[in-house]
Length: 169
Ligand SMILES: Cc1cc2nc3c(=O)[nH]c(=O)nc-3n(C[C@H](O)[C@H](O)[C@H](O)COP(=O)(O)O)c2cc1C
Image (tube, rainbow, N blue to C red; front, side, top):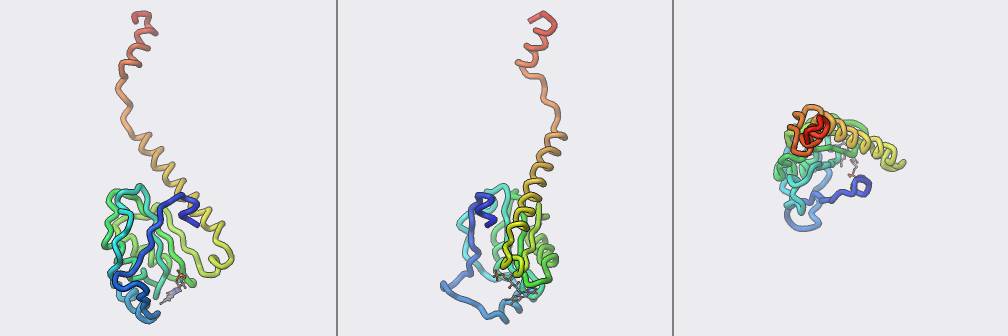
């Protein structure tokens, strides 16, 4: 839904190794809780080439999923901005967002935590609000950059106008 709304490219985080490899829930919980980063396949799209990268993870054991940690470690974001989202049963989202921030070294432009109940009931409103925060942050950052930019030197056109205004051009 996010990709469709944002017209974004999507890259799935896939474990390295034989296709279809599916670790047990106990292993997922253990690796996440231990802060492990497991190997994943190389991204199709280099995240550093984008202006904004949204990274999503399930919450496992109040922790970032080990494959997402592995992906973040293997794929520096460069100058791209980051936004985080997660799915969860009910608790651990803030801890996961803090871990994502630590691993990728970026503060999120916005975050979205979706509980399983929200996903099942239809997460449209939560997704709309998240996108509004993302877009709002962007607009505010652009306005701030514009406000702090030095005033341009008068160019030839402006000089011609000022000469005109004084009747000398
Ligand atoms: C190993 C494991 C650990 C989990 N730990 C948590 C947890 O600590 N907190 C929580 O709210 N949900 C927890 N859940 C529930 C998942 O976060 C939730 O089912 C998942 O995000 C749903 O998204 P998915 O369909 O993409 O996996 C856990 C699920 C699994 C499989």
